[in-house]
Amino acid sequence: MQHKSRITRRSLLKAMGAAGVGAWAAPHILPSGALGANAPSRKLNIAMLACGGRSGQILGSFIGENIVAVCDANANQIARIKTMATEKMGENGAAMAKAKVYEDYRKLLEAEKSVDAVVIAAGQRWHVQMSKAAMLAGKHVFCEKPMAHTVAEAREIRDMGRTTKLATQIGTQGGSSETFRRSMEVIQAGMLGQIAQVHCWINRTFPPSAPTDMNADPIPEGLNWDFWCGPSALLPFKKYYLGGCLAWGRWLEYGDGHLADMGAHALNLPSRALKLGAPHRASVEIPTGEPLKDSYPSATTFRWDYAAREKFGPVAVYWHDGPKAGPPEELAKELVSTYKKTPGSGVLFAGEKGMLLSDAWGVGGVVKLKGDAKFRGVNDHEALKSVPVTLPRTRGHMGEWLEACKGGPSTFQGFALAGEIAEPAMVGIVALRLGKPINWDSAALKAKGAPEADPLIHRELRKKWL
Image 1 (cartoon, rainbow, N blue to C red):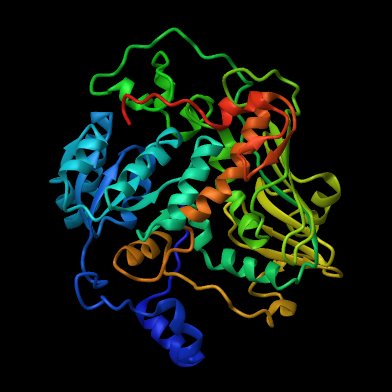
Image 2: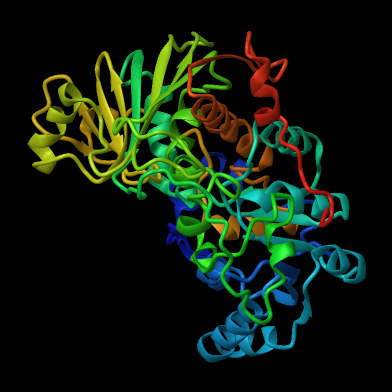
C-alpha cells in the first residue's frame, strides 16, 4: 500500500512563503547539478527487476520515467505487466511496451549501460542479491520489502547502504506519510514519557505449519522455475508458490511469513522513533502450540528486548499475528473508548504519560495522554502543538527516491536503515527456527552459546543464478 502526500510545487512555495524560508529550505534545497545532467526535469532510464503483482501495484508511481528494460524469470509476468501498462497508463505505458526484455537480471545489468536506476520487487529471497548486483553496477536502487532473508543479508545491505553514494530506498511506503514522521517527532520529544512496551500486530493468519509438498505440479510454459528459486533451494514446483508474497512468503525456504511481510512496515516506526538498533534478546511463542515444520505458523508472538540507549530506557517490542492478534488485554481495553474494539492492525506505544497508536504501516498516528477520554490525531491534539517539526516532509515515497536519483536530498528510508530494521526480524526468525529464545550479539552476528544458529544466520545460498 502506498501512501502519497498531496504536496504540490504551488502549495510548497506557498508554505515556504508563510513559514519563512529557513523552515523549509534545508529539506528541499536543489543540488548543485540541478540545472545540468541531474536536473529534476530529466527523465531517468529505469529497469524493472521482476514484473509480478507488486511491481504492477507500484508501476504507476514511476511510469513517467523511461522504463527501458524489464526482467523476470516468468515470461508470463512480463507480458502481463506490459499489457497492463499499454491498456491503462496512456502514452507512458505505451512507451514501456517497447522496453527490452530479459530473463536474466545479470545480462540486463551488463548490457543496458544507459540504465540509471532499477526497481526491484522479486521476492524476499532475491532482494539483497539483486540490490547488491545493481549497486555494484552503479545503479540507484528501489527495492520492495522484505529487504533480507537472513541476519547476514541484513547486515550486508546495511553496510553497503552506509557507504554508497547511490540513492537507495526500501518499499515501506508508510514511512513517507506525514503522520508517520509526526509520530516520530512526538515520541522523540518525550510527549509519552519513557516507553516500556511497543506492540505491533496484524490479524492475518496462515494454515498451521506444514511440511514441504514434494509432489511437483506441472511447470507453466514460460517459467524458468530454477531461476525463480534463485539463491534458495530448488524445491518441486507447486502452483501456489506463484500467488504473491502471501503464497511463497508462507514457506520458510522462500520467505519469513507475516513477520517479514508486514513486520517490515510495523517495526519501522518503533525502530526509527526509539532508535532501537539491535536487540539483546529475542524470543517467540506459537500460541496454538502447533509444531514448526516448513512453513510459518498460523499465529505467532515475537518479543525483542532492548537495553537503554541515548535518552530512551529499556523497552520490550512485540510482534503478534494470527486471527486473535493484538496487544495484551490491559492495553487493548484503552482502545475501546475510541474504536469499540481492537483494530485489525496496529503499532501501539505504551508510555508513562500516554499512548500512541498507528496502523501497521505506521500511518494515521493518534495519541491518548493521561486524562484523555479518547485518542486524538497527532496533528490535532492540543498538547502536541508545541512539538517542533524536525523531519523533512515529502511529496511521495517513490517521488522522494526519484528526486534523490536526480541529485536531490537523500531518501528518508535508504538501505542503511532498511538493513538495521530487518535485523531484529531475522533474529526473531532464528529463534523461531531453533525453537528457543536467543541472546543476541549483534557486533559478532552470533546467538550467544548457540552455535547451532550459525547456519540460520549465514544461510548457504545456491550460486547458480548469482
